[in-house]
Length: 200
Image 1 (tube, rainbow, N blue to C red):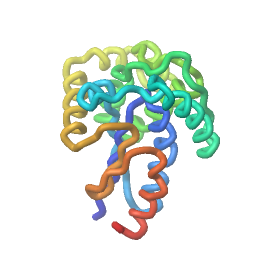
Image 2: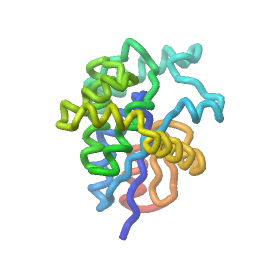
Image 3: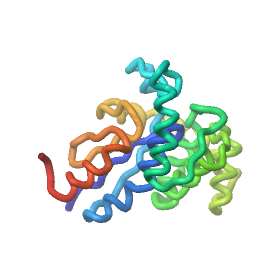
Protein backbone atom coordinates (compact mmCIF):
# COMPACT_ATOMS: atom_id res chain seq x y z
CA UNK A 1 0.00 0.00 0.00
CA UNK A 2 1.27 3.48 -0.86
CA UNK A 3 2.43 5.64 2.01
CA UNK A 4 0.37 8.69 2.97
CA UNK A 5 1.54 12.15 2.01
CA UNK A 6 2.79 14.09 5.05
CA UNK A 7 1.65 17.71 5.14
CA UNK A 8 3.42 20.02 7.61
CA UNK A 9 2.07 23.53 8.11
CA UNK A 10 1.80 26.44 10.51
CA UNK A 11 -1.61 28.05 11.09
CA UNK A 12 0.02 31.45 10.72
CA UNK A 13 1.41 30.59 7.27
CA UNK A 14 -0.53 31.99 4.30
CA UNK A 15 1.26 29.62 1.95
CA UNK A 16 0.22 26.80 4.27
CA UNK A 17 -3.36 28.01 3.87
CA UNK A 18 -3.05 27.87 0.10
CA UNK A 19 -1.63 24.34 0.16
CA UNK A 20 -4.22 23.12 2.68
CA UNK A 21 -6.95 23.91 0.17
CA UNK A 22 -5.52 21.47 -2.39
CA UNK A 23 -3.34 18.83 -0.79
CA UNK A 24 -6.05 16.28 0.04
CA UNK A 25 -7.61 16.34 -3.41
CA UNK A 26 -4.19 16.24 -5.05
CA UNK A 27 -3.17 13.16 -3.05
CA UNK A 28 -6.53 11.44 -3.59
CA UNK A 29 -6.17 11.73 -7.37
CA UNK A 30 -3.23 9.37 -7.04
CA UNK A 31 -4.71 6.99 -4.53
CA UNK A 32 -2.97 8.55 -1.54
CA UNK A 33 -4.20 9.69 1.83
CA UNK A 34 -2.66 12.57 3.77
CA UNK A 35 -1.51 13.07 7.33
CA UNK A 36 -1.61 16.65 8.53
CA UNK A 37 1.02 17.90 10.97
CA UNK A 38 0.56 21.43 12.33
CA UNK A 39 3.86 22.81 13.58
CA UNK A 40 5.25 25.93 15.25
CA UNK A 41 7.44 27.91 12.88
CA UNK A 42 8.57 30.11 15.76
CA UNK A 43 10.37 27.17 17.35
CA UNK A 44 11.91 26.21 14.02
CA UNK A 45 12.99 29.78 13.22
CA UNK A 46 15.01 29.81 16.45
CA UNK A 47 17.13 27.05 14.92
CA UNK A 48 17.33 28.36 11.36
CA UNK A 49 17.60 32.09 12.02
CA UNK A 50 14.70 32.73 9.63
CA UNK A 51 12.07 35.37 10.20
CA UNK A 52 8.59 35.96 8.78
CA UNK A 53 8.81 36.97 5.12
CA UNK A 54 6.82 40.16 5.57
CA UNK A 55 9.33 41.48 8.12
CA UNK A 56 12.37 41.19 5.83
CA UNK A 57 13.48 44.40 4.06
CA UNK A 58 12.76 44.38 0.30
CA UNK A 59 11.53 40.78 0.38
CA UNK A 60 8.63 41.75 2.65
CA UNK A 61 6.91 44.06 0.18
CA UNK A 62 7.27 41.46 -2.56
CA UNK A 63 5.84 38.78 -0.27
CA UNK A 64 2.74 40.85 0.44
CA UNK A 65 2.20 41.36 -3.29
CA UNK A 66 2.80 37.68 -4.00
CA UNK A 67 0.34 36.54 -1.35
CA UNK A 68 -2.50 38.49 -2.95
CA UNK A 69 -1.52 37.26 -6.42
CA UNK A 70 -1.20 33.65 -5.21
CA UNK A 71 -4.62 33.77 -3.56
CA UNK A 72 -6.12 34.84 -6.87
CA UNK A 73 -4.19 32.07 -8.64
CA UNK A 74 -5.55 29.43 -6.27
CA UNK A 75 -9.03 30.98 -6.37
CA UNK A 76 -9.14 31.45 -2.60
CA UNK A 77 -10.61 34.24 -0.51
CA UNK A 78 -7.78 35.97 1.32
CA UNK A 79 -7.02 39.07 3.30
CA UNK A 80 -3.79 39.89 5.07
CA UNK A 81 -4.60 39.72 8.78
CA UNK A 82 -4.32 42.89 10.84
CA UNK A 83 -2.03 41.02 13.24
CA UNK A 84 0.62 38.96 11.48
CA UNK A 85 2.13 36.59 12.31
CA UNK A 86 0.42 35.18 15.38
CA UNK A 87 1.22 32.31 17.71
CA UNK A 88 -0.40 29.10 16.55
CA UNK A 89 -0.03 27.22 19.84
CA UNK A 90 -3.76 27.18 20.65
CA UNK A 91 -4.85 26.03 17.15
CA UNK A 92 -2.17 23.33 17.10
CA UNK A 93 -3.15 21.96 20.48
CA UNK A 94 -6.84 21.97 19.55
CA UNK A 95 -5.99 20.17 16.32
CA UNK A 96 -3.98 17.38 17.94
CA UNK A 97 -6.54 16.90 20.68
CA UNK A 98 -9.24 16.45 18.04
CA UNK A 99 -7.06 14.38 15.70
CA UNK A 100 -6.77 11.67 18.34
CA UNK A 101 -10.58 11.45 18.36
CA UNK A 102 -11.52 12.11 14.73
CA UNK A 103 -8.81 12.83 12.10
CA UNK A 104 -11.34 14.02 9.50
CA UNK A 105 -12.88 16.44 11.99
CA UNK A 106 -9.43 17.72 12.86
CA UNK A 107 -8.76 18.54 9.19
CA UNK A 108 -12.11 20.34 8.99
CA UNK A 109 -11.12 22.35 12.07
CA UNK A 110 -7.78 23.22 10.49
CA UNK A 111 -9.53 24.53 7.39
CA UNK A 112 -11.97 26.54 9.51
CA UNK A 113 -9.12 28.03 11.56
CA UNK A 114 -7.28 29.01 8.38
CA UNK A 115 -10.41 30.73 7.08
CA UNK A 116 -10.96 32.46 10.40
CA UNK A 117 -7.47 33.93 10.23
CA UNK A 118 -6.88 34.60 6.53
CA UNK A 119 -10.43 35.43 5.46
CA UNK A 120 -12.21 36.77 8.55
CA UNK A 121 -9.12 38.34 10.19
CA UNK A 122 -9.78 36.71 13.56
CA UNK A 123 -6.85 36.30 15.93
CA UNK A 124 -6.70 32.53 16.27
CA UNK A 125 -3.81 32.78 18.73
CA UNK A 126 -6.55 33.36 21.30
CA UNK A 127 -7.71 30.07 22.86
CA UNK A 128 -11.17 31.62 23.13
CA UNK A 129 -11.35 32.31 19.40
CA UNK A 130 -9.91 28.91 18.54
CA UNK A 131 -12.57 27.29 20.75
CA UNK A 132 -15.30 29.42 19.17
CA UNK A 133 -14.24 28.24 15.70
CA UNK A 134 -14.37 24.64 16.92
CA UNK A 135 -17.76 25.20 18.57
CA UNK A 136 -19.17 26.45 15.28
CA UNK A 137 -18.30 23.03 13.85
CA UNK A 138 -20.21 21.32 16.65
CA UNK A 139 -17.42 20.65 19.13
CA UNK A 140 -17.78 21.34 22.82
CA UNK A 141 -16.19 24.73 23.49
CA UNK A 142 -15.32 24.03 27.12
CA UNK A 143 -13.66 20.74 26.13
CA UNK A 144 -11.53 22.53 23.54
CA UNK A 145 -10.48 25.19 26.05
CA UNK A 146 -9.60 22.50 28.54
CA UNK A 147 -7.61 20.61 25.92
CA UNK A 148 -5.57 23.69 25.01
CA UNK A 149 -4.32 23.78 28.61
CA UNK A 150 -4.01 20.02 29.10
CA UNK A 151 -0.48 18.85 29.98
CA UNK A 152 -0.71 15.78 27.75
CA UNK A 153 -1.82 17.85 24.76
CA UNK A 154 1.01 20.33 25.37
CA UNK A 155 3.48 17.46 25.39
CA UNK A 156 1.94 16.03 22.23
CA UNK A 157 2.55 19.30 20.40
CA UNK A 158 6.13 19.52 21.67
CA UNK A 159 6.84 15.99 20.46
CA UNK A 160 5.27 16.71 17.06
CA UNK A 161 7.43 19.80 16.58
CA UNK A 162 10.54 17.91 17.70
CA UNK A 163 9.74 15.10 15.26
CA UNK A 164 9.23 17.59 12.43
CA UNK A 165 12.61 19.22 13.14
CA UNK A 166 14.25 15.80 13.28
CA UNK A 167 12.79 15.11 9.83
CA UNK A 168 14.23 18.34 8.46
CA UNK A 169 11.07 20.45 8.31
CA UNK A 170 11.98 24.15 8.22
CA UNK A 171 9.01 25.92 6.63
CA UNK A 172 5.32 25.87 5.82
CA UNK A 173 4.00 24.15 3.85
CA UNK A 174 6.50 21.30 3.86
CA UNK A 175 5.25 18.17 2.14
CA UNK A 176 6.92 14.76 2.12
CA UNK A 177 6.10 12.13 -0.51
CA UNK A 178 7.78 8.75 -0.05
CA UNK A 179 10.68 10.43 1.73
CA UNK A 180 11.01 13.20 -0.88
CA UNK A 181 10.58 16.71 0.64
CA UNK A 182 8.92 19.65 -1.11
CA UNK A 183 8.81 23.13 0.42
CA UNK A 184 6.21 25.70 -0.56
CA UNK A 185 2.77 25.88 -2.13
CA UNK A 186 4.47 26.56 -5.45
CA UNK A 187 5.69 22.96 -5.43
CA UNK A 188 2.23 21.43 -5.67
CA UNK A 189 2.54 20.87 -9.43
CA UNK A 190 5.85 19.07 -8.88
CA UNK A 191 4.22 16.95 -6.18
CA UNK A 192 1.44 16.06 -8.60
CA UNK A 193 4.01 14.95 -11.18
CA UNK A 194 5.97 12.98 -8.58
CA UNK A 195 2.84 11.13 -7.48
CA UNK A 196 1.84 10.43 -11.06
CA UNK A 197 5.17 9.31 -12.52
CA UNK A 198 7.66 8.93 -9.69
CA UNK A 199 11.06 10.52 -9.23
CA UNK A 200 13.01 12.27 -11.92
